[in-house]
Length: 203
Image 1 (cartoon, rainbow, N blue to C red):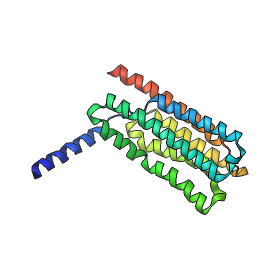
Image 2: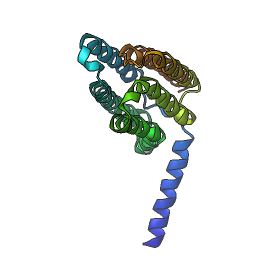
Image 3: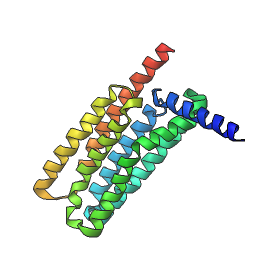
Image 4: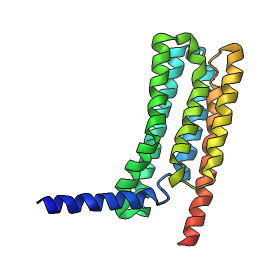
């Protein structure tokens, strides 16, 4: 029994090593594009509802949007991974989630901490969320197309620019979330689209 357990553990280790050196193709341009449109729709809805400018509602609505976007990406990821990675699909999905997990956790807990202990600092969240996305992208670069570096750079620059701009007024503007995320997610979708074409060509 110990030999069987050892053999299974070694097989699992080998699969993990192979997955760590394989480009992850589970992220699809369609789902990423949809998340950008959802961000724009949320910003448009908030701009029409002045009450959405309160910190609690503003943050709550964007966190709900983020959860919906995560579900959209996860559904497409599951299908694409099964089709493109076959036997390695589960390992690679787990690895992709693991790489993005720290940034995701920071994106969830930081606004909750601000709302609880420093609601006057909620104006920082649009910029911080963009910075967290940048960190998540860079944490995943090893298994993503090399050109995804530019998407990470965009979110890094836009995050700091948003913080600088918002620091002048401390106003929770929906467009400081909607516009950067529309641009950033569209850029990611374009990169993934052309990367998929290159991979298909190699196949």
